[in-house]
Length: 489
Ligand SMILES: [Cu+2]
Image 1 (cartoon, helix red, strand yellow):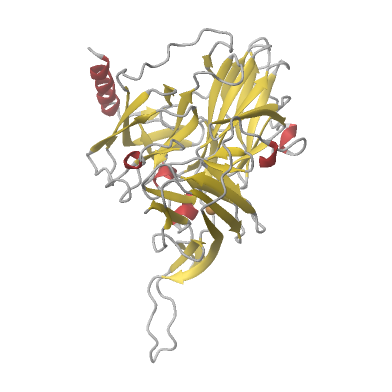
Image 2 (cartoon, rainbow, N blue to C red):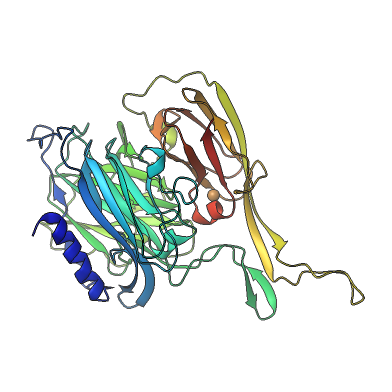
């Protein structure tokens, strides 16, 4: 059986099993990946004419169990939450076939990879949705290296569970490490996602839902009470790839007893910078190196901007008798110590900042409830009023809510600057498709614009023609209108 036949056969078996993703309630060890340090052996570089590396993703209904909480109906890739980790070496060709076994259309977006426009996975912008029962093959080069993510870009589908990590290994990392782990941080809904602001009928009163009703925050699909355990040996340098795959939650991340040295943001290398904690918004990635020099079992915690208990994992030394951190302990770094600021970071090999040929000044606003739906006509019974039971929560860029919003038009070769100011009461992680941008002294693809008139300036070079999205990576803000097209004309 060749490899391809084998993959198809395994997927067919998976389908027949009515897959239930089960989590053991005991702590369970994740082997992680070891790699030689910089002085070690390097794997052979791709020659450029190798066959593409193939992956198959099936978007399907699946049941997902959280121990002691129950079994939930989700929509997942290959029955897994998060979806399977897609891993390639820098420069390798990837061929990813997505089969849609969902009751509605879908697409997959490869967040952060500056691929060609037709592969970007935006329904009705770069491709028609993959219909139920259909399939689509995405093909692109795994470049540059870094920690990325993939997810459905169809409506609120990511909050069904259609999300996963995508790792492109460097040929030559700028920092040495002995072992690495991926930490996919997610917020979890018990049911189907609904747009915020949609009226819920609470005893006759019309209440708008202001925040998604998440029931748990997970790291690698595991809840705080049954956390993933990452094993380390004393003396090792461990690389953690922190990836926020959440729909709407921003976290502050810290590790008990250890500092983290930030080495990459959004996959791009930076001068190593030690901190005690960092913020990570939906769509963002931070790679950090932890020096394993304090034996024990330590909490890794991601404390959310909502009321849920922090997402948790465990950093466990193999030479320690402790299996778990003491119940309830949280890392000191969550409340004190050095919190990473964007200005702390300096990108490696920063391209020269060009004087912009074109500048967009964009104001982010919204979040207020507006009546929507049907209005009753004024008549003998009294003045007209709302009968539609619908309140909407609109999020705007310069007063316009996508899709009723003008595209940002640019020309190939231009240096483009986007100046953002946040006039709303919530932070917005703004993500540009198809390009990296410079913010401060780093290269990123997602940047948080904080509240209280928070300002961010992004610079990028128009070097990848097409129609791209620029949007808030809070799923509900994006769907509520905080999106524009960036279009080459
Ligand atoms: Cu937002």
